[in-house]
Length: 181
Image (cartoon, rainbow, N blue to C red):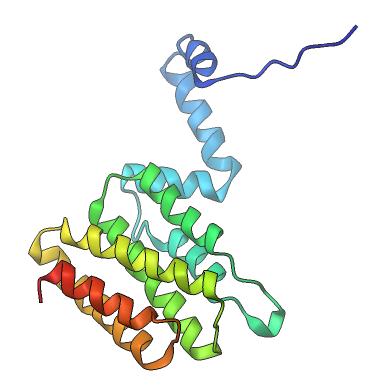
């Protein structure tokens, strides 16, 4: 006799949660909070708790885009981008999302220039994130976007000076198009 594996969905969990009282739900959330640092980061971002809720997301981006080459650490664009996706699920802050995207660009371009990273896939991901950051910044009010524009221009300048594959030129075109210059 074979046993059929049952996959559960959000609907199943939601039905079980409906039976919880307030104390039970709070206990569950407390257990989830204690279970992992990712859960804590999510709740801090969602509930706007603590100081800089972007810190754990930035730490993840930094680890995967600027690894310690002396410890033979690898890069991972996917893991760095996942940190941004995780933040987007946790928070509705457009400014926070734009900040993470710009930070991604700063770290990826900095590592590429500093270490001489010339991996085409890594640089293509940088160019795509640059474009996403431009779009995110353009949606912000001027008082929130001014510093982010300046930081992206610095990324573009660094890439034009130090990187190949037309990355800097592509960024230059995207920036001119978005800023209307």
